Length: 370
Image (tube, rainbow, N blue to C red; front, side, top):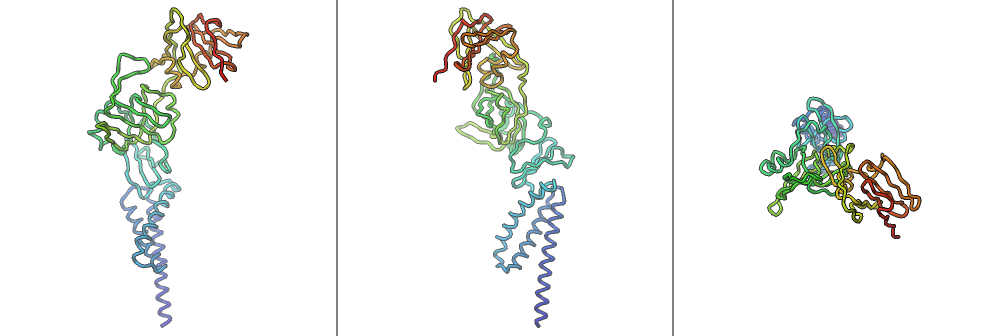
């Protein structure tokens, strides 16, 4: 009788081991298949169910515990699924919200996003914890004009929801390196600083996961191209707000080539402060207007400096002549159409841009007040 009981226990133990081996083999087979298919998660769940039954039998838990054990094992298996995808460089078993963007596919899993930049190639880019924005070549996406998008997005919102788009438009608002907005606009006869007239009935609010240093060169009215994920639509006081997340700047401003345009003032008046920061106070003297002309846009000197398109040093790094004042250690850099007075930086923050006739007696440098 004893032998029979022992034999039954041995048989049950063997069944448990066999069931354990089968479940592990199923998981390995499921992970080895590098295709998105409903069969993979079904097989995975069957393996997890077998594991759960084994645990219930081994620890002699009540049948009601099977739900809690299964949930715990399932949560752990999702972590294993993500780690396995990273380790073996393949698609996770549990992929949801698969997004198609042109020739690109995006697979979302728990804490992991996998990018397949070419649908015909099994080459993947992994974004752990979804920290990065668009990770493929944005050249492969057709650009959408912001006016066209904003005029149609409300009625066609389901077509854009949870999809990556590349959009080109003018900045209506910008804060720091991780936030900007676009609104519908109309061009005007005023071309300076790229100024346009914005409408506020609908806004595209663009959020960047991380600070984007490229935004330092952009300001309100500048044209920019970004790619990002359309996340949701909000209505507030009969106005619409479209949220784009995980954005990335994909345009470049050509700041290498520029020309200086000036209009002299006659008669000359007092120097005028045009821009100030921690290091310098920049003035113009005897100049009515001063423009920085790039291939695509024209900016006032204050706008070009404030948006970091221009560094003040760029205006005098190739002078025709340099004059030195031994009295106060100031310098004048002569260009073909203008002059720049650099006051002694130990006693003054002033930099003064004037016409060709500017000399050391024309203006005085403000002293630093301690």
